[in-house]
Amino acid sequence: MTDLATILEVGGPLAALGGGAAYTRARHPGAYWSTVGLPVSTVRLLSSYGSVMEACGLTVAPSRLRVLAVKATTRREVRPVPPRRGSSGRPRRGCGSACGSPRDRNPPTWPPPPNGCGTPGASTPST
Image 1 (spheres, rainbow, N blue to C red):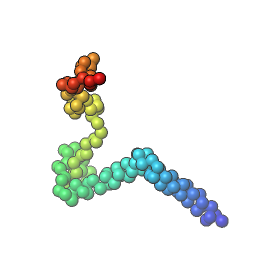
Image 2 (cartoon, rainbow, N blue to C red; image 1 turned 180 degrees about the horizontal axis):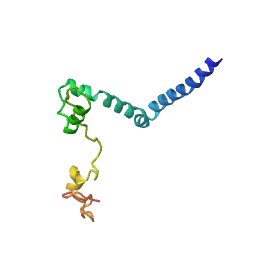
Image 3 (cartoon, helix red, strand yellow; image 1 turned 135 degrees about the vertical axis):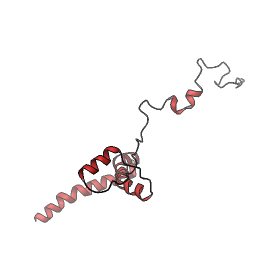
Image 4 (cartoon, rainbow, N blue to C red; image 1 turned 120 degrees about the vertical axis):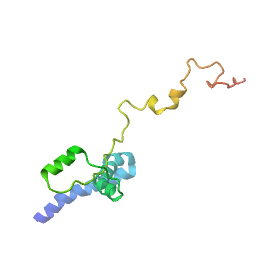
């Protein structure tokens, strides 16, 4: 009887979690990506990044502090390390004129031109 209780205590919440994930994936893909897909992708990237960089020959020389720490604590050789990953978000100040958005290049004119539709050179609609 205790085995059945253990199976129900563990299996019930796992089945509910799996069913909820399946429902969210089918009905709300954005929420599914935010709660399941993005964390899984991040873990996959972080777990394989170092080995991929080393296999492709994209490692860089370690910092002086790392060389000093390795030599002080162990007797093994100092190996090259994978390069650091930069942040993948927007800049701290936002994406304004530095990105060259069309609104910055062609600011809107106010009041709108009297020719009707607001674009230079357009003719007024005839009635």
